[in-house]
Length: 480
Image 1 (cartoon, rainbow, N blue to C red):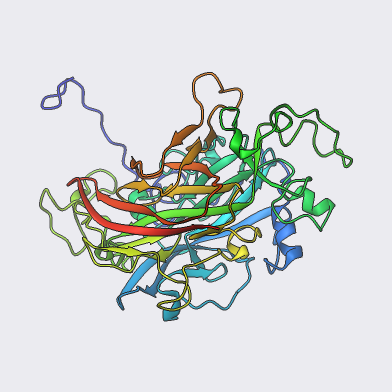
Image 2 (image 1 turned 90 degrees about the horizontal axis):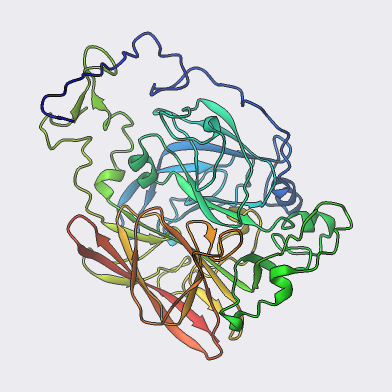
């Protein structure tokens, strides 16, 4: 194929006169399509959260409610102000957290007003999941359920499925593990601005067990334990028994589970959620003008637009949406800042005030009702510690742990768990070993130490284009 002198020219179809359609890039779309092949939802999580006081309302039974909102302005740890795109939950509680309050140093924690990262959606494997969604303000949005396999109309990939005014997404999760959801309209921009959150698929009896027995903690299984998928036959220190892998199934008295919900799982005591992110405040503060980064329109929409210029920008070959030069200025772990300058280093900031201990737990209203999910780790010796980590940064991240870890899952799939047990397996990463992973990648790892640990995990944010370490952060890990 010749790029300079192609033998065949494919003409672009004009979108002029079709602005009402839902399927292409319009601002905003005016058609709100009904969900094809709608099946009744069976997700118990909203009702469990409502009963526990972590939701104000469940607008539609067994259904998550999310709005994509842009333009929230909040302070940074260094006294500047940054624009954020955030998800908010109209059914969520207003916990009184004000993003303008300096003690939170830029972390946005209020599910009703907006949260960054977005509220973590936990779902039992196998349920029919529904999410009622609306986009607020231009430009239009989608939700892409990264790592799952919905039908095309529910996949949320902009230009391929649909962009929303409002829509009910529907899908069914089939693999226990760690995933995430994000806007897929102007993907790099909206993801980098904050429109994303964790999705966790728990064992099938999680949340159902709490409905059957309110004494069982939210998110635990019918045995009262928190579990995730793993095959640890080569790592006996985590205490996974043969019964955890091929348990002789005792039928559920409520008739909910036809197969063993705990097969190839491992119990854990402590759970940590790490969402690593970097922000370029110049990029973020373009968000207050929604159209500032749109291409310069031509005479015929979609045909002769100028993709080398934008409103208020130049028209030169290097002026591509003003996003051709990302230089991070602020760094975070699950919304908590690393308060340090470019090229420097800092320990994860406190959630209370300067000099106070690092943040201990994420509010349960942002964790689908599960309590005790940590950022900085404080755990007991001889217990299983599960870390779920997402690289939400624009750049690559390098991690080094002060203690051995065993990676049990990558990008939402448990390593070595049937039917995929013949070509991969959990991986031991010895203490002090640095490894690098790129944007949107996730891993799950387990830690178990018989000896006390007082150290830090080191996070290096790499300027991927220039292959330079832009910033080094540390996350405390205490095992006592």
